[in-house]
Image 1: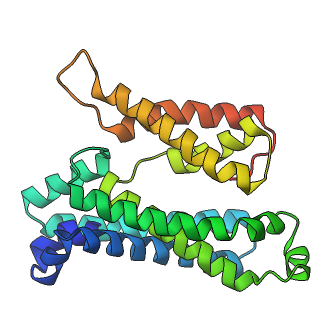
Image 2 (image 1 turned 135 degrees about the horizontal axis):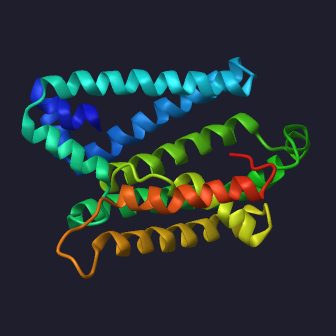
Length: 239
């Protein structure tokens, strides 16, 4: 998204065309998410130490921030403002065309996700058990990677990089329902995540004020204490 928004000032042409296209935004964001996920998976495959993976993840973040800083330096004020406001997160200001693109990609991703619920449940017991049931591990990992990239990319493109929801809600749902069955967890995470996000958006709207807070600030202020509480309450929580 930084390349699309800030790069329009530098490269123009194709970048500008893509940045104003709903499908262009969704595809570009999904590709970006896929690249990050692929890098994480490759790192996890090569490096087994958790601390090393965390450090490498921080380095990825540092490199990304450096690239964004370079683009920001060469961009004009209008594009920088657009990028900053996008980074705040926003559930409104979407056209019907953007909603249609979001809905189309979301439905396709969810349908394919439902098809792999059983393989996901079998993986909870272990890869060897899954293989004994005839589950194609590589194929399902690829499907998971593609679905995750699509959902993450299209959501981030149109709503911004909203913090906390994707990180904490699955674990809150797991603690609430006390199950690892994806048949229950998948719809529960979707519903609970939507409820929490809408509550945060209501707080951000400030009914008694004419101002609207960045939803990212609200989700972080509400989410951070919850995550800390979960970590203190649960001796072992697998993020």
